[in-house]
Image (cartoon, rainbow over all chains, first blue to last red):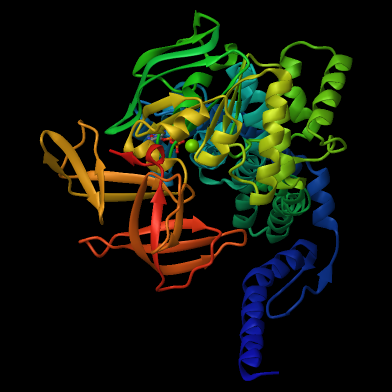
Amino acid sequence: MSKTGLGKMILKIIVMVIILFVILGPLFGVVLWSFAMKWYWPHPIPQEMGLKYWSEVFHRGRVLDSILLSLEIACIVVGLSLIIASPAAYGFSRYRLPFEKILLVLFLMPQAFPQLPIFINIAAIFSHYHLTGNMWGIIFVHTMASLVFSVWIITATFRAIPEELEQVALNLGASRLRTFFTITLPLAVPGLIASAIFVFLWSMGEFTGAFFIGAPFIQTAPVMMYTAAMGYNMQTASVVALILMAPAIIFMVVIEKYLKAEYIAGLGG
Amino acid sequence: MATVVTKGLKKFYGDVHALDDVSLDIEEGTLLAVIGPSGSGKTTLLRSIAGFVKLDAGKIYLDGEDITHVPPEKRNISMFFQNYALWPHMTVYNNIAYGLRLRKYNKNEIAEKIRWVLQLLDIEGLEDRKPSQLSGGQQQRIALARAIVVEPKVLLLDEPLSNLDAKIRLRIRFEIKALQQKLRLTTLYVTHDQEEALSIADKVAIMHNGKILQIGDPQEIYTKPATLFVADFVGTNNVIEKKGYVRDGVKFVNLGKLVLQAPPNVDVNKVNIVFRADEVEIERRNEEIPGYDYRFDGTISGKLYMGFKFRYEVTVDDENKDIKVIVNSDKDFSIGDKIGVFLKKDKVFIF
Ligand SMILES: Nc1ncnc2c1ncn2[C@@H]1O[C@H](COP(=O)(O)OP(=O)(O)O)[C@@H](O)[C@H]1O
Ligand SMILES: [Mg+2]
């Protein structure tokens, strides 16, 4: 092996170790915590392990409810976000809209300020309209905030679709609507899926908004996790954390397996 | 009757005159080729006829009907896009069937028509493939099939051969011509390749900076170019710019010992002498060739072997020592040989 080869190899190993330490280290702790029955300092591993907290999560109403609530909110937010973002993104990508800059700034607004004061204000406003303490307030806030990245991602997707592909359809006699649904939308599927995944994961993990608008009547999974950890119930918090990670891992596998082969190859041609 | 008539089409993009007063007719069942260098407005012309350009002025008629403001989907004019624009998410079959389904044919009729067009273009067996699994030549044919299978009133072709290898290009050129004649398709064919245009067109239009400079049948364009640009653009040409002079009210220009009379409308300070490398003959200095009208002398200063011919660079014996011309000949000379260059009167253009 040459000198540079060896150097590269060592560098690679160091980088891998750091990655393992940074990502898998905490993860390992969380996994251990989720099975721990008794774990007192300074023992490196729990003295007693068991499935009690896992089974509790799936049986006891409060924790399971929070996870189901988060799932429900995330799914509705994904749907609304796609329905609102797609036409807007199409407009941005194809037409010179009169107030394009202003509209774009409006979409980007929610990310431009510190979250905490915004959400406290929103909570105050929402309470007038009976949007606090229930699911719809959270859905509203999540949808608005998620438009920032869904409009962004989907606009880029539409821009990448050559206009000529639509013009051929018009040229052959298709209406604009039909062209959109048979040509543009199918070609945008990878971007729509990417956007949906992103919004889904973000909504599942969002804490601040869900906390201020949902509290104290409803608890999403992240809020549940937070309160559990605050009450030194590390086990319940760890189990919820692991469950919240599941979708991300599932999506990663799905993207790797299907999106690449089917669409990315097809779009290249 | 002319199927397509355009009258005074104008389209400006800022200062760029993409179309500048373009008027032309395409007779039913004929092929009109528009040639011009890149950026001359050819694609803009096609896109206007297809309905994708908002014109600044002018009218377009199809079968006598004003279609200037008819949206593209209602025109029944098929356009072949320069880079094919096949839909990557559909199979070849579905790409071709798209226009047929819109025309409400039933399943069997669609299958029948697709079989017919695939056979016509010699691309059977590709139905289930995706465009990304096809070669450039196959993609080109699928795009052509998709355009003609709907039996359009007019076919617009935007540089259909420009993305193909030189070898296939020549073959497909003849196939497109045969296809167009067989189906009697009214066709507007756009290209930057003058040889391609002259060989397949019924009529040729030369375009430059958004203007049509000349329209005529291919021979007419080749033998009677109306402007310097047309003469220079068609064929492999020598363009010599010289200062002329006036004697007894007649304009002249000299090339070595050769005295040429220039038409009355030229600018004497800037006379252009144009002739084609293939339409001159050369011989040793002390010999003559009968049947030629003009002669000037020169020295061979460069030589290329072209396979079937030699290509010579000849430095002209003129008071301006920098004048060099290109001559193709099958005679074998060496660099430094003193020769005479012979021309025919109607093969020399002076602008
Ligand atoms: N959509 C457009 N916006 C701005 N300029 C354009 C547009 N389309 C064409 N042009 C300009 O118009 C001129 C003619 O273009 P085009 O019709 O594509 O020429 P050709 O097909 O002969 O190469 C070019 O100078 C080009 O830059
Ligand atoms: Mg072009």
